[in-house]
Every structure is written in C-alpha cells, then in structure tokens.
Image 1: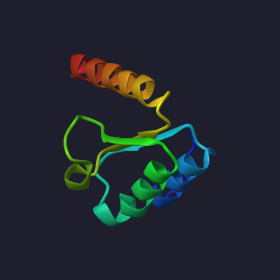
Image 2: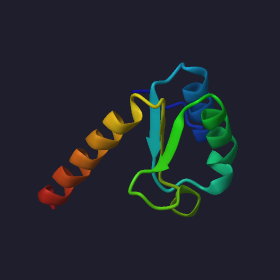
Image 3: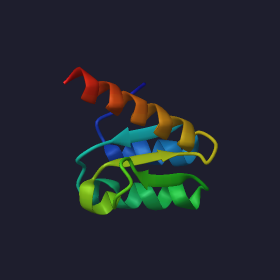
Image 4: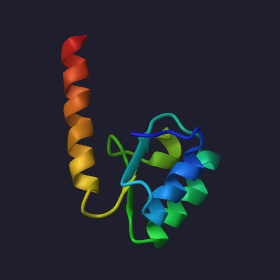
Length: 86
C-alpha cells in the first residue's frame, strides 16, 4: 500500500496501471473529479465505498474491473470487523 498525498495523483496512477486500486473516505469533489474521469476512460471502475454517491460523500474506491469487487469485499469485511471491535 502506498499513499503519495494527492488523491488526484493516486487515481491517475490507477488509470495508468501503476496502482491496482485506491480507496479513501471524506475527500472533496475537486480532489477526485478529474481522477475519476481518468480511471473510467482507462476502463476502470469507480464507486462509492458504501454504495452512495461518491461526489457527495467523498468516499471512493477505484480499481480495474477484475480487482474492484475483491477490494470492495475486503473493505466491507474490515468495516464489519471495526464495528464489532467498537
């Protein structure tokens, strides 16, 4: 896992195939809008982590079509585990 500090750069790296996937919560629309376009134009998938509208929540998951459901599943497992820990 790597993080360079810029959601736009991380999304561009997903689009370019340098990163397999990216997720983050509570981002601003201006942090992700251009990166989302790049990922989609490159054939990747972008969705809200919890199933809502990522432009409103800022919680985004981006990956290629093969890995997207696998990463989403792992994020759901991690969230369930965190809820149990509370």
